[in-house]
Length: 241
Image (cartoon, rainbow, N blue to C red; front, side, top):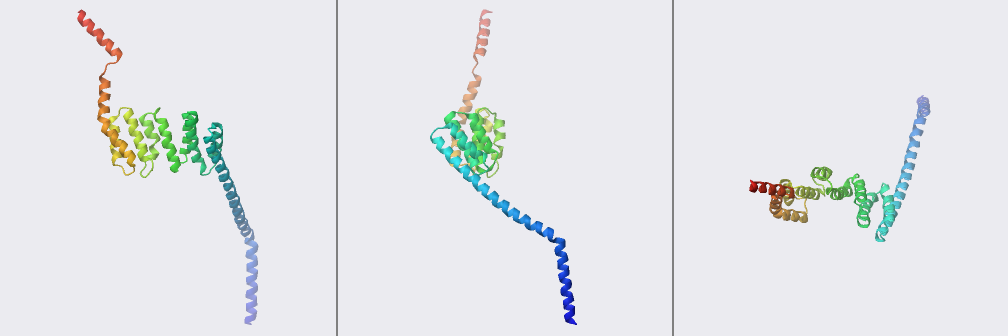
């Protein structure tokens, strides 16, 4: 009797399994196909990425040779190709292109465009590009504009925060904001993020700051030619009277 029960139970088990398979096999097959497709797509993307990196690397190498040959057209073409790729060469190419634009063409606008494109990416190379761009922009920008542009570099731990602060201090000094300049340079002399070279430059500037302030005050007290002419006229009128 027990053998019969076992056979019946086994038969029911097989029947239930068959029913479950009929019910869920489309879902199972969909999952399997999806896994296979994902693996294939990943392999394809890996292959494409390898090709992109290889092509960008070749363009970067050709760009370096073009710099040596001072062939600006090829420099722009090859580094431009590398910059269009989403590889590790695109930011580095922007730095080299900017340098070539300055050295071979003296084109600050083109150099700035390349650096600002790299700055959008962030990261160490992106931050360095932003700092270089800030140097180029500083002559035609106000202190407030320079400060706003380098603000992303001023975060604690950023490798370029000290250099960004030094640029702000220099711009403040240029605009005659001696109090702001002194504050920034004092900060740099004590900053742990500042290199010894930056600290030395800050200390040197602080040492000559009183002289710079005196010169600025002396210049401010000197009459302009128009003011001097007006003063002479007044003096003559007093003598005549």
